Amino acid sequence: MKIICIGRNYAEHARELNNPLPEKPVFFLKPDSALVIRNRPFFYPDFSSEIHYELEIVLRINRLGKSIPENFAPLYYSELALGIDFTARDLQSEMKKKGLPWEIAKGFDYSAPVSTFLPVGGFRDIHSLNFHLEINGKTVQKGNTADMIFSFEQIISYVSRFMTLKTGDLIYTGTPPGVGPVSIGDRLVAYLENEKLMDFPVK
Ligand code: MG
Image 1: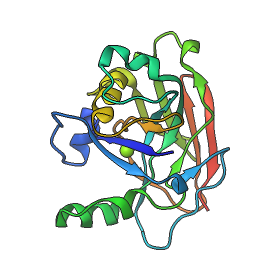
Image 2: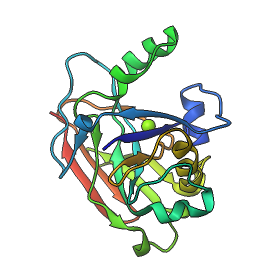
Image 3: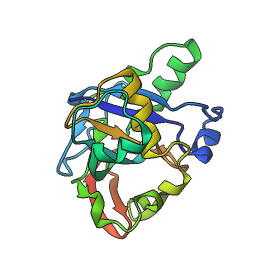
Image 4: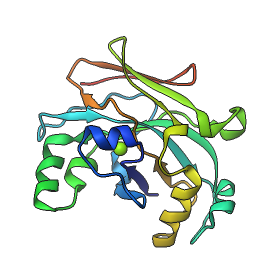
């Protein structure tokens, strides 16, 4: 199982990190050891002093596919969830400056919490889904999938040109603006539309 993450998929977020708007999806991988399920705690790592939250919509791939055309992409996922792409921003900035890969900033243990998955058919329109994150009761990040630069279908089509998608693979589809730091003792609560899907502490 692999975890594919899309970067810079919301224009306002790309701007807040001073990144140019991408002409093609930008993606990177996290290992399966990054996954955290069932609202288990996030453990703050000792190698960073600037861990940022990035709340994202996560797709779960439900069949094997390679070079999937956009119009067939909806057949390749039937459930979605919320996830947090935890990022060691201090390490990432250092790696970016040197033109080096981001793995240590993105793929560390506990860096990919994910909520329970909900069937796509249960939503009125998955291309206009509201989601938001609260830390200690205060809303810090808000997004709507209508603001994505690349749609779920474009992402699946693009990624599958380079790597075969397999059942159970997860795709984190990018974060809206408002990313920021977490601290030990924080409580993160995330909602998809009005449903609370994530609720966990930072330890
Ligand atoms: Mg992200």
